Image (cartoon, rainbow, N blue to C red; front, side):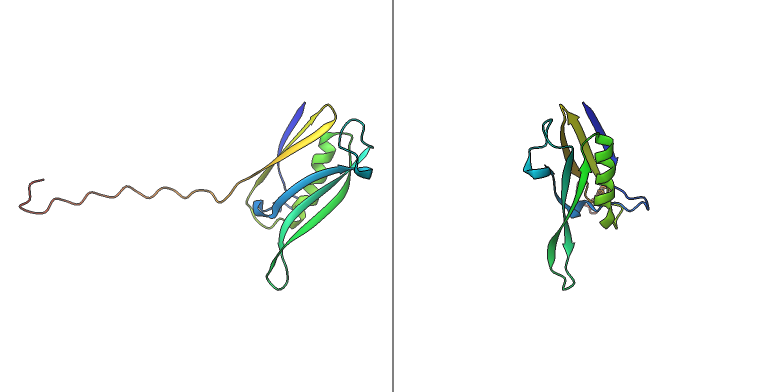
Length: 132
């Protein structure tokens, strides 16, 4: 079993914005299940949130044929395909696992980093003449 963690970034260092990744799936050619009996190539489908010219929301789907031989090759193609729309430093971690010739992955999305907590309020001094 192999598991890889990586940042989704293209060769220019652009990272996929976490909010853009709304779905990832992989299909074998001819609709076969992705497994040891699948043909030698699979297709990645990545659904990414996008904005239309009129400002409305839409989903953009990218597909790419991928060699099924090794996880490293799959990982490289995932990085190339998904990171093309990256415009933010908000990271996404993709975990890829190959076990018994079946590829599985999960996407961990990270939101904005929490800001430093506000300092604790300073207690007000007791009013004059009032026992404290």
